[in-house]
Image (cartoon, rainbow, N blue to C red; front, side, top):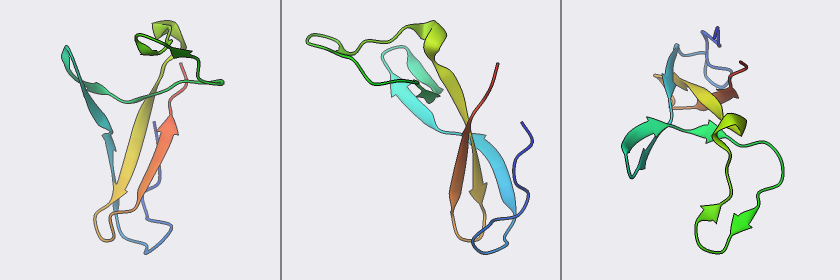
Length: 73
């Protein structure tokens, strides 16, 4: 994805990355889950993998501002 090259807060340089999350199987990329969350009594959120949208993030090297985007298929 083509994101911002300049920070909207301080005009510093932005660099692309992801928001990593640790799960039982190791590290993965954080995802956006559209809709109202449905909670399972035993397993936390009810999630269908096909509904998850990976998140791309952009970080300012000067002030640390983060901007994130849910990537489209």
